[in-house]
Image (cartoon, rainbow, N blue to C red):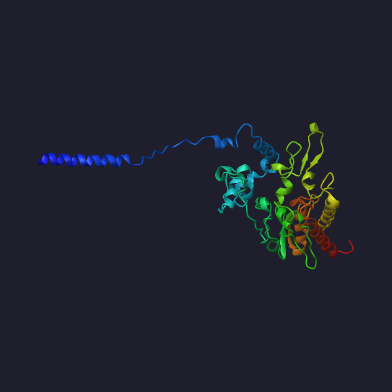
Length: 340
């Protein structure tokens, strides 16, 4: 056999082996598909009125008003007064002031495009400045901002300089709900009414979001418990008592259940008169600029503002604790001049 023929036979054998191998080779084809818009339409379709309703409710809320959003330009305020600062804070970042703050809106509390659901960004218990913490479910989101910015135990000292800004700072609803951070006088036994915290699954949400009515003005994502009707709608005040009726079946037409609000308002008026007599607040209840005020006098101003203009529930959030703070303050002021 010639060398050329031998080479040809070897080449043919190799090609045959290669052909057999090719027949057993697995061929895989990867097809890349463009994302389809159906996932968006699960929420954003023209038949889903759920999100439309929520947006209408939100437009009635104080969050939507932008009333204090300008405070977002201040680094110490942006955490709660602008959406950007809130998100930075709960992400563990230091909130940074912005010259273009945006109001609290849907994506402030929810991140559906990131998390693929409408769960709240905050799902763990939040700690107040004095160290007190309670897990109130969905209401934990509210606690982030609706709490005192000051710990009364360190804020009030032996000598205090008052001004119109003195006090818990506008949103101590969580402190009141938790029955804490009021100025407590020595020798007075403070009690609380814990049920709005302990008998609800989601704290604030169970009352403020439970019912939607009267043109989306109360309940739902308006978070409002009262609303004023226009003249075209008959006028008057709407109370979201349906939220209360889950527990208080005999709630009546407003929130003055068992006379709690009337009692609190009466005590607030009495305390204001005493503080005015001391020259510490004016006729509008605004604390005046006074230097060197003692702890117990400053504590009375703190309690007056915390229960009244700051909490604004007229005692509903925690009736017994609110009564205790007011009565002890009144008792102290009366002890200064028994004859008055």
